[in-house]
Length: 111
Length: 112
Image (cartoon, rainbow over all chains, first blue to last red; front, side):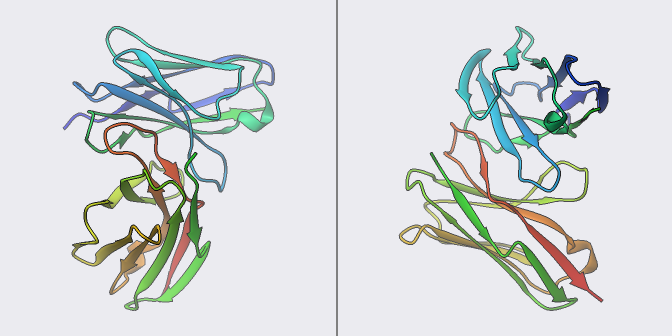
């Protein structure tokens, strides 16, 4: 069965640089979620999209933005990167009423 | 907003014994309670979930109980095996709608 795809899987950036993370949800899933998981911490909800519209917003810094495109893939754009942005970033998708399926994550390291 | 508390943060049990992890939630509107197992550097994997219209659910060695009145839910793993060693997260959500709010996690060690 198809799973959530995230790219890249690993990303290394310098402070103050920008990064773009991509997420391809499971086909026919209409909702996408982004989570950030720092070292030794629980995943924290960042933002979600339902049918290409932002549906909810969590603890997402103003330096971050995201969108969902017409093909339902989503991108998380991160600017002015800080050391504290180093984390695992998970995308999850679901069909309304069903469980969320997590992607493999993107490990971002900011040097 | 929802807040999920999870205890203990670390748990060591002898192989073959049972492990219990307990969580509480704050938002009485939450109606979906998944449990995830996460190995280092990997994605959270759903191992069992329970909805608010059910008090208990079991899947082989894993069971979850829910007390809506007290806003408590618990994970029980019986006959623990070495491969059960991982971090376990409880979580709360609104079915069909909302983001998942995770507890802080429990690092489970299965001792030989």
